[in-house]
Image 1 (cartoon, rainbow, N blue to C red):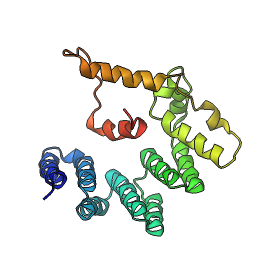
Image 2 (image 1 turned 45 degrees about the horizontal axis):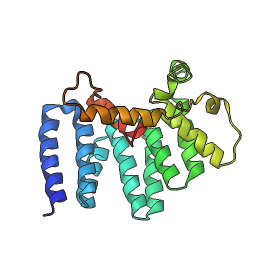
Image 3 (image 1 turned 45 degrees about the vertical axis):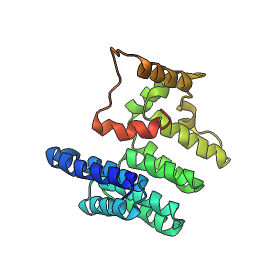
Length: 214
């Protein structure tokens, strides 16, 4: 067994134990275990975990559908991947986070019109209060601002004129992301850290999608 596989197996055993201890977070824990198996090169084990989540239904099943579609795209099984995305569109547990994940996945594979339809699903699920928050002074830091900028980018690549939603999607200030990354780097080098940013488990996946390079 390779080191990566051994690590993935250990993570799955730990994940199963953690899922028993925190049953309300079971789906998210097993999604992390499936990702570990995929990184280890064992797609079959990863798919088994994801298919189990799909069979169980609910919020995490929708993320599992997106992950399965991503694996199929990587295998050049485009029609099968799109079939998974079509299943997602019919899932009653669908929410804006799933819409964002599907939109980003489709954009990565050059399916811009399909991606835009999922970004539009995302926007349709945002309340007026959340849109107002994005338009505020620090709106570029909000979770919502990332998919809104992604939507604007897809629309530009499709040659579409800006719409109202494009206009409110804020760009980060100059060098903002670089400065944020540098700040994290400085914190990691300090011997004593007085304050640190913590994401609860339910927020970690969203944070990783919004700031994948940090």
